Length: 256
Image 1 (cartoon, rainbow, N blue to C red):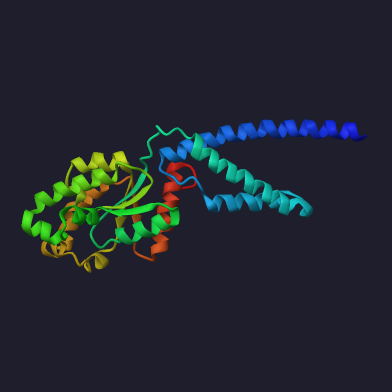
Image 2 (tube, rainbow, N blue to C red):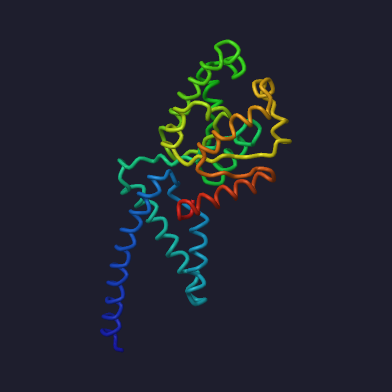
């Protein structure tokens, strides 16, 4: 081909690239809407790195480095596009909410999940203490369990108002029927189960007073009813985190 023919071919290819880029950004907008709706972070560094390595494998050695740099820029543009063009009216309410007995590891798993996903972690018991200005045991002793449960419902409602969070709940939140709608309106509810031997080590005074086995028998059917997902937590923290993320990926049909 002579120079003019080469330029014409480049122009044709560039026009194809422009059309494909426009199509790509349309899909990026849909991805941004989905992520906002489900409370997911805009950036997925693991997926980006996987795609960059795939692109390097597709290109000849002399172009792999340049191709990677090009797609790093495309990914950066896509993230900025999602932030600017995702409709602000779409609610982000898909929190990850952990329920289960005191001592089952909810708080530890909440922090680990939040760190893994780049989300904020919250604990309803901590919010209740902040609201009351005293400890949980003092609230129950001074105001009674009914007053404590009402405060718990208020705390759960406040935590579920926004999305993109990982939330640890109190072991008895399932004992109030109104909490069902609050939790399920706020996200995916996960029951964290643990062997009885581990639960018997719970330091909570209220749990000790009532008896772990008795409380578990009372609450087990409630946990089953409230839960969208059930995960065992009898090994390493990371094993339970991986199990939760695997089930969530399967449930939602995409990378968390």
